[in-house]
Image (cartoon, rainbow, N blue to C red; front, side):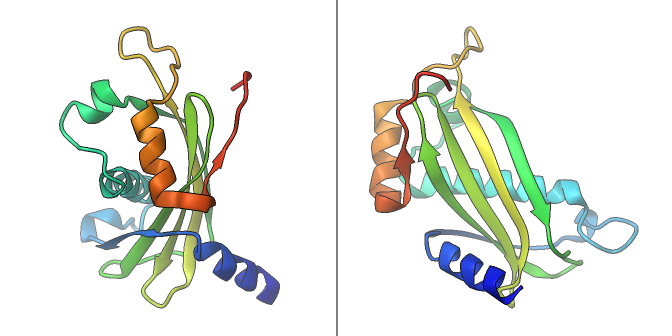
Length: 160
């Protein structure tokens, strides 16, 4: 367990984006803990805030037509839980980028720094007209590179 905490502590140094929140009463279930689905909303809000933070101009059309990124896969591990009024922080980074997809990695931790959730989400850039995957925009790639620097891996693959 101690080794796992050391590995996670080293991993957390790669995360530049931090999104903060407080658990609302409507987000807890009958057991008094944050409902598992709520964490998915927080992760999405953090991803959107991340894109804004790297310099993507956000408007109602940004994620619908200009950069239509669709979630195609999510992994989430729950280590503990949060309760009403607990403060939390979502750490976000883009770990890798392929031709038409990218992978967000996230950690959610409480205000003591304990990791509550570990997650990864793969998003694919899709054509709004056909729904088929299309290459990521070069401007978006540049924004990611500028923000993540050496912490992102660009993978050239024909089989995404």
